[in-house]
Every structure is written in C-alpha cells, then in structure tokens.
Image (tube, rainbow over the protein chains, first blue to last red):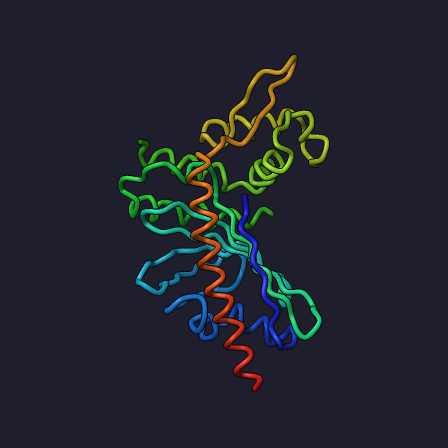
Length: 130
Length: 109
C-alpha cells in the first residue's frame, strides 16, 4: 500500500533537487522546521505545521535523482517516503511515494516516546548494508 | 493492545535490508514461499526462511502451510485503517506539493 503523488515543477532538475533537499527550501513547503543530514543513515527532524514533530532517518540518496527516508512520531507509526525527480515536459517531475512501515500501524504504542528513542540506533544501521 | 516490545521487534526486523526486500516482495506478489523468494535473491532458501521467521515473529507476515511449503503473506491491516491512512496522507502530500509548485513557480517569475 503506497500513496503516490506527483507534481511538475517549472524548473531544471538541479533547482528541483535543491527544492526537495535543502532544509531552507523544505521549510517553505514540507515542514515549519527542518533539520536534515542528507546522507545514508543521516538523521532528520521535521516539525510539521501544527507542531507535530517527526523524527527521521535517511535511507538512500542518489544526488539529483532520488532520496528516501523513514519518519515517525512518538505516538504514530512510521512510514517510508521516497522523493524522485525525472525530466518532464516543461520542467521536472517530482514524485513522492509514502508507504506505511507495516500493518502494525494499527498497534497501540504505550510509551511511544520511549520507543522512538530506542528505534533510532536500529535504523541507523539499516542502510549501511544495502 | 501491544507494548513497545512489539515495536522494537518490528524495527529490528526491518533493520535488515534483505528482510525489507523480502517483505516488499511478499507484498508485491500477494504471497510467496521461501523457495520463490530465494530464486530472486542472492541468498539461500535457508537464509530466506530465517528472515521470514524474524518477520513472522514481529507480526509483519504470517505463514500458512501449503503442501510441502509455507506460504507467507503480509499481515493485513484492517481495511478501514488503510483507507483512512491513504486519505490522510494523500491530502497532506497534495497540500505540500501544491506549496512546492507555487514556490518554484514564484521563484521563476
């Protein structure tokens, strides 16, 4: 199960890449506050409009083409987001794919913030062996 | 209904790239056996079976005997929750990408 959304930006790939990876740019459309270490295994935090804070880990980066990350909150299950760029008529297509991590999405998570602290090191190791 | 231990098990299970691939393949195929999965992976059937055991232990897949093999499928989330999720997440990305498009259009003007 994935949610896929696309938009064509009237800019070249290089500019589109900056728009979907630079924290300053991301703060203009994705989240109010963005901290991002854009490399495999890099950590990130997003404070969404409304104040929801999401912790994230970068899974993969192919400069100029694609990057993906996993994000989650203290009390909601995580999901994986892939942002892909492709040439398109009139500019650059941005395709976002978000998939829930698993069907455990329905599980209650007492002590969610505890879980979040525990999860980060596990995930940090994940991309290295890919 | 479940404590943090389950969540740890899930993330532990997903920390391995081969297991993530296996889980994705099971989902894509709508179900698979260890033999089928091993045919497309550079690992042995035994290794795949071990990964399936970890995924099953975390509740991400369940296995049913089918003849001599066990067929695994991704544990289904309640359909209502799935629809809720798709609707909510889709609406969020619609808003975000509309903002992104306005941003790049304005910069260009």
